[in-house]
Image (tube, rainbow, N blue to C red; front, side, top):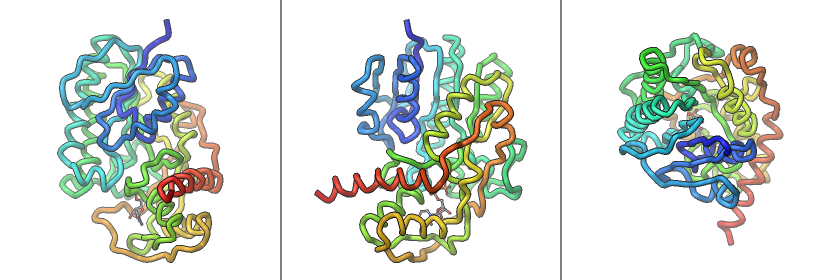
Length: 317
Ligand code: UDP
């Protein structure tokens, strides 16, 4: 019998890539998603494979879950426009959803890996950000449903670990990009590619001098798999690509070039509480996971460009 893994948020960008990887690694996988931001087409490959089951369900409701060896808890809106459109739902899935996952894990002896985020650092005053940095978060700002939702998720994991012996790993995921990003997700990479392939203006918010560190999805999935196998007392671990740091304007220029140099770059107002800089301090991940992202930004962007080009072609027909 193969071991069973439950993946929440299975139809999302990261969830679906993780499902594919777990199936390849010999797991039976039950994917759960309410399809609020996930897309079934992301699971097209998985659904043709042995050992995969999908259940459309909302983790904010009490669910009957089967016993499992592993639970990968990724369910949550994750792009700013998505979580800002449903702040209550975002807080609820990270609170009730996570509580449900932890209770089930303890009852069946499963190990849990949860997806946290670099957003727990808020608009950081320390650069790059190590896991020991406690962050700089506006608790009532427009992003707080996500930032505080994920901080609560981490607090809940720590409490369940201390009080009930839960076996938990916490991934603090930095900006990740690649094929299967939703074209209407509103993130910077997807927006710029969709705009570029349409020849529409590329919308740089603010001056474009703010930075993010962009990690290619295959590297991130490898980091998650390694973190799942790491010792129990590791605490939160940053997963991202420090060498992929770029300003938004640099990204706009690159994506404009990759999509045929047709789009003008335009400047539009900056979102509230938008973090200025973000780059993972990767020392802990290197030490504990012996993990390093391998795909350079140029390579990752050109693979992602092909994906968005195919999407644009399909929609154009
Ligand atoms: N951004 C932009 N144009 C867009 C979308 C985003 O300039 O069309 C900027 C946004 O202001 C932020 C950065 O890109 O500074 C990253 O935004 P994203 O929504 O991708 O993710 P975040 O890291 O903020 O969660």
